[in-house]
Amino acid sequence: MSIKKEYDAIIIGGGHMGLTLGAYLQRAGMQTAIFERRHEEGSAIFTSECTAPGFLHNLHAQYMEFMDWMPIYFDFNLEQLGARCIYPHAQSGIAFSDGRPPIIMYSREHPENLDKTYKSIAEYSKHDAETFVDLMRKMLEMENIYAAGIYSPAVQPTPETPNPEVQAMEVMAEYLGLPKFINGMAPPDVYDYLFETDELKTLLNRMSVEWCQPLEREGIGFGSIGIFGIYFNWRLMVGGTHSLAHAMVMAGVNEGMDFYESSEVVKILLDGKKAVGVRLLDGTEIKARKLVVSNADMKGTMLRMVGEENLSPLWVKRVKDFQIGPSAVLASTALALHEAPDYKSAKWNPDINKTFYTVVGFDTTKDIIEYCMDAVYGRIPRIPGAGTWVNSLWDPTYAPTGKHSLTGWFFFPKASELTREEWEEVRTTHNDKFIRHFEKWAPNMTWDNVIDHYFYTPQDQEDEMRLMEGDFFNGAVKLHQRGYNRPFPEANQYRTEIECLYLCGPHMHPGGGASGAVGYNCFKIIAEDFGLDKFWEKLNRGY
Image (cartoon, rainbow, N blue to C red):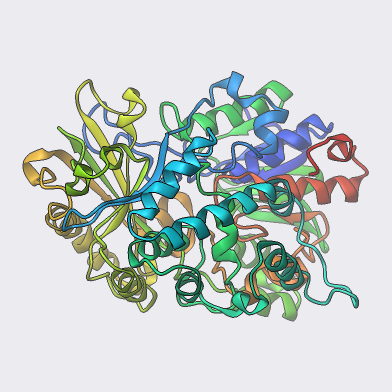
């Protein structure tokens, strides 16, 4: 369709945060359009047939942990629009190369599953099983509080509460019966304090980095416990994660929103210090009567689209100083298989062969720490282990009948640490290292079992999805870039110093993950600024 020349609200980028914001803006009465650089919306929530015909791989967003809480999922009835989920019984686990018992964490769908988790951990330590299950029960009791923290703008400091995030963690410590000093620890130290079993600590440390709790970072101790509230809650999108993005688009279409694909915004138009529209790559200009919001990366938005010359010296410095990576930088492997992995550890508990998220390639906490530190310091990890999913075990649409589709995440160096030529070398060699390593854990995982394969580098993630450096939070999760400091204090309420210009990318609070939270929270701020109906205040969910 031809591009209209004027809208109330223009959103730059059709990632899921922008899709969330757009649906709410349109419902609130603002005529809204999304301009997406790629051929389709969704950004990191996409599914690729990158190996062989009929094999589907979620190369980035994979497990859906927010579906019980996600406002847009319920407010716009996304399930009726095609976003359907499967809730795997065995949620996460780790196998071992010598075939000793796996550790498996089960879903919270049925109360007896905590007993199964207890039994799995108790193979190694009853103390650890009791400690873990007790913490899980307490975290589940705090579920609504946790959700409200994600789906609300960051709490601002006051003279009475100069550091609200730390104070909240101290309250949580008291509730959990833990000493306050735990919050000053790095995740491995927390797990060493709580547990005695290295097998459990190996799994938890790997899961911690999945959730942007970097192993080297002190001062985030309760973050590595707080994420227990998300474990057991992982969903699989039927037919691929792109079904969630498609449902979000349909929600916007049903509300009357317009979408323009292959329409890259290169400039935010200003009238003095006020955003009044955008210019596309082909020169087309579209006016925004009320506001512009960017779902794109912050540096690209502020330094390129707005222009350094239009920013104050303070904002120029803040934007340039904003750190990206290395602790949330991913590469992905995709394997089309004849057979699903058959782990040596399955002789103790066959559920490890049908665990939704399986850690493979690490036998000790030392392995995990070495692996992560390699990536942090710019090296391709010497241990080619991964967190893996075989989605076809749960949803047969992911692979042809009788075959299987495996996808896995590696933590890798930032894209800028290697040249493009070096990344191409990694693309051609790392899957071979991974398969040869994998065979030690699952003897059937040889090249004879592989129909075809693909490797997706951090550079690919930057090029295709604009996840800068391959960082899925599009900004490092460091103490000075968390909570009310994200991305920096002057921008922590989604507003910029340019009037009527807002930010809704994963570099904003609370960060990345397929939550829709940044878009939802940004809408709350816009509703306040433009006098829109604060519908959420009338709901029982608390956010």
